Length: 507
Image 1 (cartoon, rainbow, N blue to C red):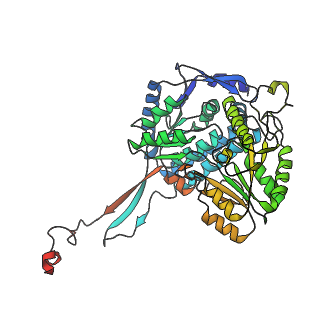
Image 2 (cartoon, rainbow, N blue to C red):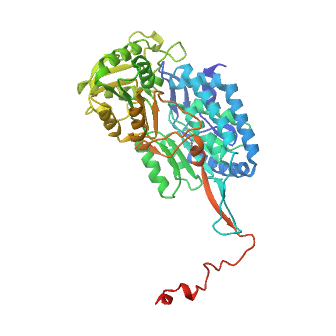
Image 3 (spheres, one colour):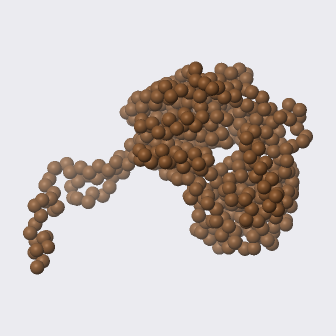
């Protein structure tokens, strides 16, 4: 497949009611390959009228989808998983060209998407409620799990396909329709991915492109019924405020500032490799990246040396080549990251390796948005770099005096997504799992996901859970039903109240 031809075919399109549709909407936004800084296509800002039509299609399709039996929905979702397998390589290549990540990471993203669809295809038909022990003899009390209706999923560019399917697979398994608003920096790949839903009813999954105005219309519309958002704190807060006016449910994954703790009992060579991976996966553009590395003073020097050695091995370049690190998503992100790095150095952090733009790249990559993976030492708890989401290829290493200090600094963050702890001390492991205020704790197993386990954070990292049984219930209402088949009189509490129970009877 000629990818440039495919990018041009998808340019100016959106996906509505089962088909690609040309949008006359303006302005057009150029789509840039971050490795070369060359234009590869353009995306449309769909109009308000187009969004209205998409919402109408979604509501009609959702009613038909929910009317089907659970086995049918499960079989159709398994077919979606099979379709992802078939197109995985082509979509992964497009993903690398549009976002810059190494092809291996793009291919993994597609594989993980298959896994989560198959998981929810089965979980969605496992239970649609539960029977309760009745509080009145002879009655039947039970719950029914029902879909929200039309779910809007607003996505970032770092994992556009995987994060889409974490939510869409659960939403569809629960009986909802889905409208996708992709990042402006991953829209064409997301549009291409819509082909995997061809077996589903037209209008059940749709994709509209554009900026914040499109997202605002989808969020505020009375005929959308639940919002799933991954992105910045300010945008997440704006969505929450908009939803509050309608008591519209929402799932928000806003930001991370994850700690990575290393104690003397840890196998340091393994911990150093783990920290290097956790800091630099997807060029550090991961919400669960290791962004605050707290290392016990007794092993600090050795650990810094080991991480620097691992970092120097990393190959930087075009994600379609044999590399470990691609470019950042776009020029604005690289500029922001350079300011973060400069501020850290200004406040006293020392660059061990990296620290600039690569100088040895081929000529065709000279304008790409590359940064060297960078290790900082002598970072202190007061520095700005430890107090906000870095979202770039940086490993700031901070010395701590004790495990207690590591816990205190970890919990001092306004964020609470995840934390990684490297230790073989059972007491430290126990304390970490119980005392750290985050949604996830990884002990000697950095930044792993599990389809069957909930993903999400606390504090300013957001609200709600993706994945696992919790992730399915995120997209379902629970209805309580109580049935008295004999329609008996409930004289145990109906009028008239008995004289014996009146207060006057006690005097």
